[in-house]
Length: 273
Image (cartoon, rainbow, N blue to C red; front, side, top):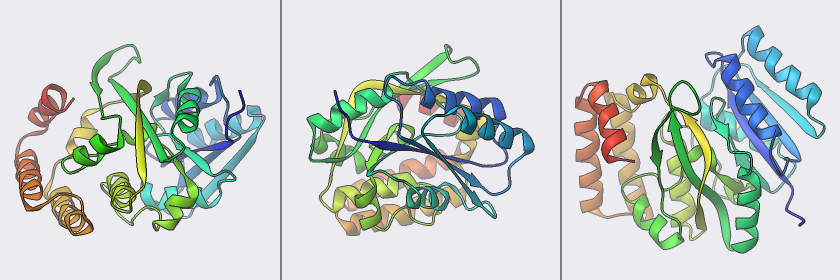
């Protein structure tokens, strides 16, 4: 079966573990359907160990391997935009630098693209692990059809960010990723939905997502809360949600900000998965 050509985009910064990056890139290369292009965006200066991992994979990958270097750390949104500019293909798959894609991830998504020609983004489910990849602690499930995704987006991000594959032309039409340090992916999905574009999620688990205590700590704090409240109001004015859904979300996030990291971790695992 002939599938659309596609690129894979990975952003990485200096604090990433070289072995995690190695596993992430390797999971992209060892796919049942191999990407036509891999784009690595170096978000600021990297360690020599990270540079070595990237160079080793560049030498072994037989398709286009594009490296984009940013002078300083700009955050995932701006770094992703830099990578999007270098993509040779209409379809771009995102991949986090510490996660592991399932071997048939891209094949599943490419089949979904053929099944849903109206969709501009295809996501899927993730299993979350700590330490060893086999140590699965939870699964984040997102809705499948466009109508359910729109309703879900009023309260929570409707796409598992490390699983998404989207159309370059649509992302550029919408102004690409916003210059945010938090929630830049969620903001992009809202821009797609409120502009009338269709997003579809597949039921299969596409990515094993690495978890750590630092992830839960980043989802707390008043800086995160202020960005969240501002975005929720912006999204309401764009047509996603109403005053009640915004108020409910803001209160939940405020309470989430107040609780200690260990309680936040338990809440995410027990009630938000």
